[in-house]
Image 1: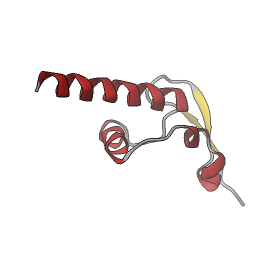
Image 2: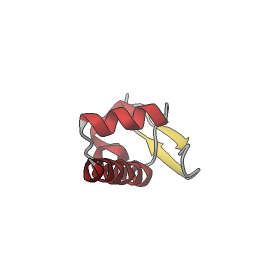
Image 3: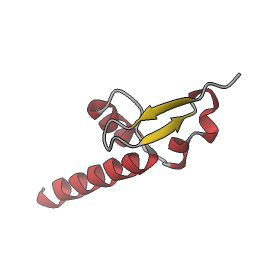
Image 4: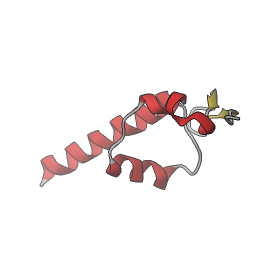
Length: 72
């Protein structure tokens, strides 16, 4: 039986449903992260985030990387 869990996003405090037992239909599966983005996210948070926050953290990381590369 698939596990579904009601969670509160640790970043924005909004409720969302985590579907760890059915990861392909979980809200987080709508966000595609590369390995570097996934690693960055794991350094900041130890639990699931809502899809909106994942996208925001991803965009912040991409902006940081762009700024870092443009300074080099």
